[in-house]
Amino acid sequence: MLVWERPEPPDRPVPAPLSRERIIRAAIQLADSDGLPAVSLRKVAAALDVGPMRLYGYIDTKEELLDLMVDAIYGELRPTGEGWRAMLRSLAETTRQAAHRHEWFADLIGGRPQLGPNALAGGEAVVAAMDGVDIDIVMPVVGAVNAYVVGAVRREIAERRAERATGMNEEQWQVASGPYLGRVFATGRFPALSTVIRDAAHLDADETFRIGLEFLLDGIQARIAG
Image 1 (cartoon, rainbow, N blue to C red):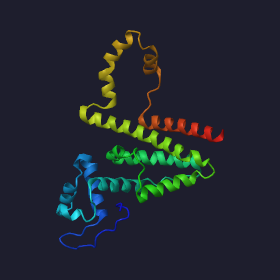
Image 2: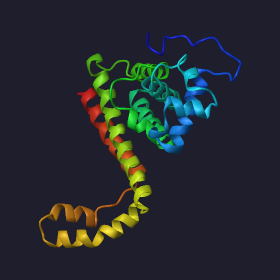
Image 3: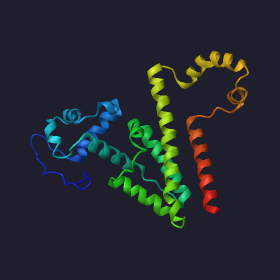
Image 4: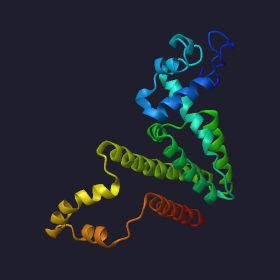
């Protein structure tokens, strides 16, 4: 029986009350503070001031704990909008916002579909907004948007992590890399790349995400209209 269907054990008021909700909340706090390596059943039990064996009545494995954590974050998304385009835009934006609040979330999405109640509820809202779209392309469309978001947020979070690891923000890194790129581009081997880097507008992460998303939605709209 999957964790979503398995009932919790009866509440035990001593030595400390426990529930899946408390366990998930403690695990998310650990992950938010110190990343996924900080999350284990033993560490979560210590944060709750209970013995590790207490948790096994609620969760069998670390994989179940991670599934529950991810579904809790899906509960924060709540995409809304009139029509499929607005709904897909909201899905993309709220997923990105959640990943910025919880960096570890981006590491756990993008694989097999999430089957928790919050993920299913969000999926239902998105698919319902696509009523009237050819049923055979509904899931490929949603999958394309999800793939775009996962790729974008992982790139953004990788930049954050690089900044923390190197002590240089993006602008400082660009300044440090400038002399090398100048020498490379001076060889004339990369004229197109050199022109774009030198002359094109340098967009921030928000603008880059928004423009890329609108390109994708435009393509989806053209495909549906065609």
